Amino acid sequence: MRNSKLLLFSVFFLVIGSLFYTSCKSDPPQKPDTPRPKGPVAVPAFDADAAYDDIAKQVSFGPRVMGSEGHEATREWLVAELKATGAKVIEQDFQAAVYTGEKYPATNIIAQFNPEVSDRIMLAAHWDTRHIADSPLNTDREAEPILGADDGGSGVGVILQIARTLAAQKVGIGVDLVLFDAEDYGEAGGQPNTYCLGSQYWSNNRPTPIKPRYGILLDMVGAKDAQFKIEGNSWQYAQPIVQKVWVLAKQMGRSNYFLNEGGPGITDDHYFVNTIAGIPMIDIINLKGTEETAFGPHWHTHHDDMEIIDKNTLRAVGQVLLAVIYREDAGQF
Image 1 (spheres, rainbow, N blue to C red):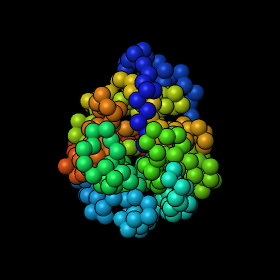
Image 2 (image 1 turned 180 degrees about the horizontal axis):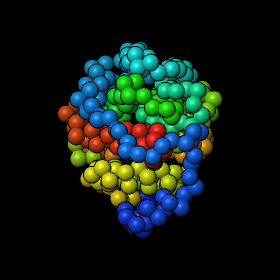
Image 3 (image 1 turned 90 degrees about the vertical axis):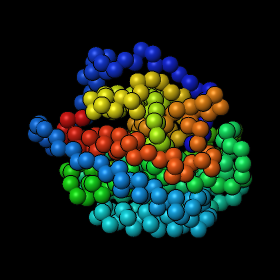
Image 4 (image 1 turned 135 degrees about the horizontal axis):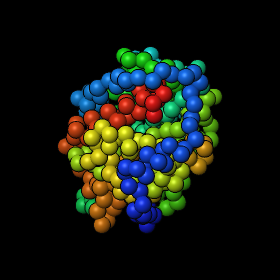
């Protein structure tokens, strides 16, 4: 994703409590196809150990840069893992024309649970990794690709484990899990649309006929003591979803991760899903920034390896997302 540090915005008026609840109550209700009974919602436990192992598996393939052996091996593995859940898996192949003038084969991977159901939500992450280590904090091997344990690997790890949970404890709503390719091969300091080529292609050529009501993007959700501030474009385009997710996270005791604090607006996959596909989508992204970057100090450096990944962070994110899905299924979100 692109570091848009100059797009900082203020949400000082955003106080979790009565304002959040009032805002949520005033939003037009989004009715599912079939009324669902009210009652206690059984939310499965998120397996952070399994998610951690999935991240380690991705890292074992090396950098997942388009055109590399690691990229192809990862694609094959991801498709096999998602098919094993019984989901309908779609491989959306396209040619990614990157800012250097080169073209690479790329693939968005979509796994659908209950593909025939019209009431749908969407979770997404990107599965490729950065082709250079160009963070201002990086001090060596700048021309070499990064491993991307957090930046790419963590969101995918969480989504894979959610897919296995949905296979074991089924829901009635439709759930689309989308793994975007070609997110991170953009030009530093260049035009924003040189990034997120996979989500741009998906948004212009949606391979599924039913449009999800909303989406949640995961990006860099695995580092210790991550800070998921309210990302600027999420607030601009999908404010009701931000409110609901952050209130739910507070209710679940996860406010140490989901901070009631405004962050920068980031050029990430959700931006193009919002602006091209017209699907409200938020970005859960670690915005524990420094003076040099809006992100953590490991971003786009060779320190983005398994030592960065923390199971407690994975568990916090995964558990909140499972609560979103199973509460949606019960008509209580």
